[in-house]
Image (cartoon, rainbow, N blue to C red; front, side):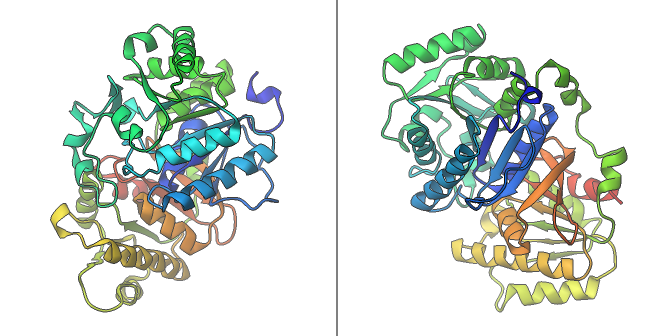
Length: 424
């Protein structure tokens, strides 16, 4: 059944951070699905927007396990209360987490609440270079453990074996759906899942190296009430929702043009970067050559928020500016300093809006969560993408703001500058 032939959304996504929410919302929109994006667990009486798919972005990736599970279950209950038949648990394509969670505990809790015995696990996002082969996660031609994710300050990924990683997060059996089976198509995928189910395997890590294999996984898991993955599999699921009439949506590619650009509010702009990923460091370095920039130093004495507010006052009305804390591995502070810097970036966002800023680029999942919550934003409308998986979002309340919430690893090196120049 296509989404157009039914009232209400067919899919509800629970994302574990805010940039992950925008990423999956952009993927579903690209597949032709009308997509609503909400931030934080909706209230029990919150209305469901008119859409084909609804994404609820949480800040649970690095939260305590019990807190992350509770928030995810609250969203699942809200979706079930509105009759949404399928749940998609969305995590990052780098699967970054710790041995305690939170991916395994969240998925187990959602499966239990849904009365579901099995799900598939697939963080592959081939368009971003993330592939899964023999259960191992690759970024380009390198194992995940050989990339900058090995040095992530909160969720260092030193083991690329997803079966092993997930087995440390759940008491339930974890199995593998190998690439030769996936390449035989949706029917073979479903048969293999049923066989693994008879053996008691609850979590099935699926190999995938290209879009066609993600399509086979989407077709072979269409019977499952709960599916998990990154935005790559979500887009394939979205195509099943929207049907062949929406097939051209993917071909449009990234870029904000025409009517979409006209919808973005005009006015001053700011970049706020807290991510320390290699991609973001390149983007920060490029933007520093173009925009006036202020670095939040976690080791500096005093109130970091006071310093950045004073700097913004001095640079008000002078064009785009950038405030950043992004730093290479040896230059980062401890967890306490990182929290203070996040709050300073959120304070910078509030002060910038008071000064008239209407376009805000934010880099990093934790930073995006702090900024969105600091600004009190509850929902947005997803528009065109500046880069794949990096869409502009329009707030639904006042003042009207345009937000570009960027996952740390996403985007080309000139993203910050190009995104603001394209939307002048």
